[in-house]
Length: 497
Image 1 (cartoon, one colour):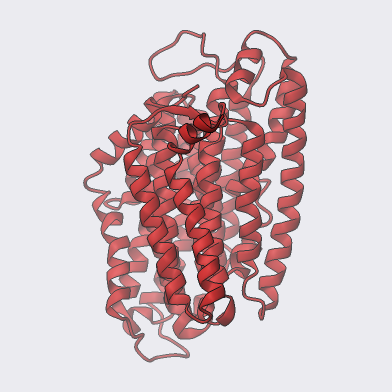
Image 2: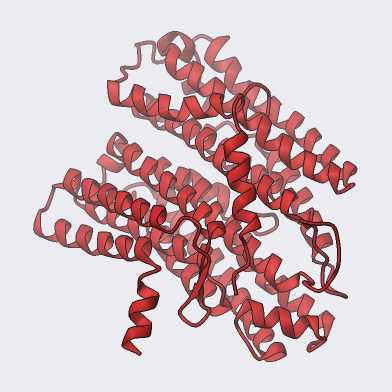
């Protein structure tokens, strides 16, 4: 027994590093009050240790803890995205006025960030439905606290309460779906469930209903319509650093878990087809459900964003729309679609975090996040304005930015799968998004400031951090081959039993 445990532990070094980071951050905060820089440094060091652990697992495909977790290139891909996003958010937090205002709670803030990263790591590796639920709860509970960490602001407490209520409802429905699947198949392991379903061991309508209940939990995590209601209020009320974290890392974990469950549980492994293409189990039309979800998600996200005057809330609805674009990759039922979604996630991380970082910097200077605060930004801080413009152009999906490549691969996968109409819907939604992003351009470059007119001071670390986000946003629009190959390799090595 001990030998088996030690054998399994050898394959979860990144998770062990994050667990130790969490403990070290809590102890440091208790022993050295008001040394938040030290706590942040420990968390960044823990993330570096986790990155080294991930590097040692390159190419591994193994199942551990009696099939509860899979350590494979697919999970490692998402872990890299989560780890990179977590590191950026810690660096953003060091220069955020909102985080500085927390005073004695800053140490807890950084510790909770590491706890949330740990939950997300486990989410993307989970191959057991109960483990998926528990790890989703670990990530969610910490995010409830972080979203309400600005106690002095009323909308922060409101955001935390709404997040908790919607999260509790979604996880309850998901747990009920898990219980139904267990009753129908006698197992919680997704590979065993697939085997039972493939041999007709359960009623298809009952499995579809249980699958929809499961999708409620996944949909809540990725902010898919109609499970998105918490997103705008939480994104607006939470500290902008946490909003950025939820918009990228939380989505990455949710998509990683959804993609693994979707491919393993509902795909007919015995069906013959072209290489890289899959067939759904007979009687389970999960593809149609995903098509409806993706269209609703990107359309509602873009249309409601048109009416927003708060840039942070605008980016929240934009984030919902981008979840819809990424869902398009799943409906293809093939390696091309999955790899296109994974490619999009890396690109989305840089451009979305960059946009939120500019929001943080502008908010530090003006004290608000409304459209009005961006008037004359091109004159007060040309670097910030140009940077924001590039990030928004990339989010729109225009060349020569990386966002164009991300959407190009998703739409190409749809066209190859003969889903041209769905690709057209995606393109039209991208056109709609250009309008509300253009409102920000207009305020930055064509409108004069009616209030603050002083230049926005930018330190060298801020310049460096913005450049780290800007360079990939442009470079990946011109040179993207290795990233595409990495995503395709990660999908090809997917599915360890």
